[in-house]
Image 1 (tube, one colour):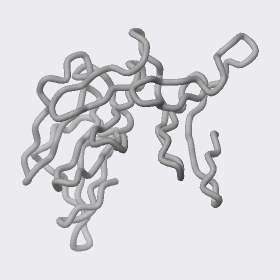
Image 2: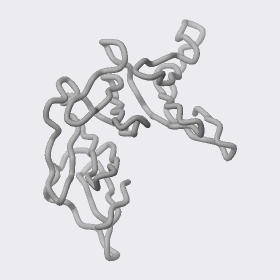
Image 3: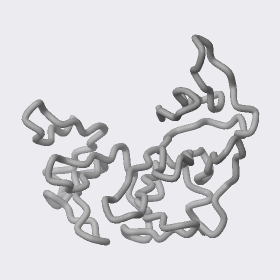
Length: 169
């Protein structure tokens, strides 16, 4: 979901839709592929996580971000601001990327982690659910607990409790 002045945007596995005036309408400007993540930017544009890469919806026009390299082939499941002017793109099997402008840089290991969720806690720290639980320290991912034979847990969702503390699920 992304709230815009023109209405609420909803990403679905059948494309991008707008809820306005009590009805849904599909945005023809966006390719009808699975929409996996939406993030409204400060400039009013909306970044769109796709089965293959990241796009931008601005002033009713859709474009695929140029210059993002291998991220253009990744299934982008979450888009979150990193708190420093860039955007984190979490890919289902291709790891975590930082998008600055129209370029992207991988933050994790070359093989990539399968990222399922990204959450910012009350202190502003970014947490990532994967095979194990990670937090972002500047431009590096840090495991909360190293993945071992005894601790090989797949996290799927992260939520904050009423106290603001993180609760992995």
